[in-house]
Amino acid sequence: MTEPRVVGIDPSLTATGVAHWSGKLHTYTPWKGLTGVPRIRDIRAQLYTCTQSADLVVIEGPAYSRQLGAGHHEAAGLWWAIVDLVHTRGTPYAVVPPTTLKRYATGKGNATKPDMRVAWLKRTGEDVRDDNAVDAAFLRAMGMDHLGCPVVEVPKTHRAALDAVAWPEVTA
Image (cartoon, rainbow, N blue to C red):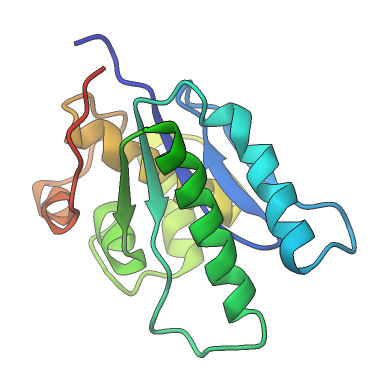
């Protein structure tokens, strides 16, 4: 198997983090002032190209434990729009719950955003200042690790988080 093309996506209505299969990190923001369906369509369109050649997309699942606010319907709509984009293409995808992502990155399911940034810095030497990009990078790292091509070294206890994900079959 050649090195798999894994994309990590941390969905957000204001700044969607993406780790491209090349390893490059992006944060996609919608056009200023957009809300509702136009905002969701804008973010989905920005993700279209970067997911096009992927062998696997790893997306952070919704945070069900969060207090539901005014934007929770729109956030759920964005999540489903991204899943629909990937599914319609026939690209395998895995959904990683937020606590599982944090456990893989830091060993703690309740890690903070600064904890995640420090973990990425410690593992890669890269000081990424965008929390969404860091989450996306760890999502991609989980997918690569699952496929036997780890891009970061994490302790065995952290790697156990991979077992909590329903991984699809991937043929690259």
